[in-house]
Image (cartoon, rainbow, N blue to C red):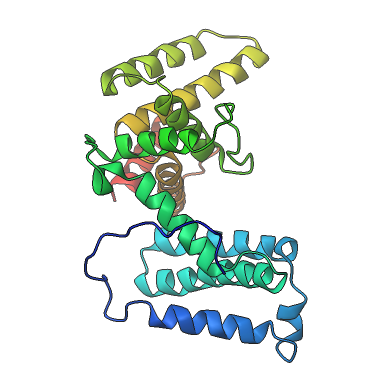
Length: 271
């Protein structure tokens, strides 16, 4: 199906695969067969809305595989996510709307436009500037002035959403100039947190600390969301070692002194 827009120019170059995408065409054919009149009853009754929860589940399973560092699991979970993409495209095509080619064409146009440092003559300093430029170019694609958080999903994890809002603001010219400035801003809100007594004010300050920490992480080239996930998993593992060490020494954690708890936890961390 054509959307009436000329195909963008894609620079010549080798396809980074020994297969070149032939099996993707097979996937599209299988998907169409499943949705055919004599296909699968379950596949035929699905809608964009009914599939929404499956997309969310498959995405989280992919994230788990990535965190586990399991290449085979990552490949399998990527397949499940890809299935969701082709499934939604086939539903639309069956309804006389856009199809998977339209999805791909739109993506190619987007990638070329938002990578002028690759397909044009723009220069960038680092990966963070690429992301900032992405948000700026994305805004330029719309003639309508949007709010800084417009169309950034509210259901995103809070740290991820904060980073996206910050990058869009940076693309529009509001950004800490360097790492030192972002860290100084973080120190200031942490100091303010230590001086509040009112619960509501404390809640606001904690939010400011987290937001400033995300900003500092971005300037350092760190993804706050995935880093916190790994840190939380690391703490959980260290805590289990702490419990084992404390039990082996007959120490009750809730009755131990703070000094004892700290010493055993350091040992669990270092071990």
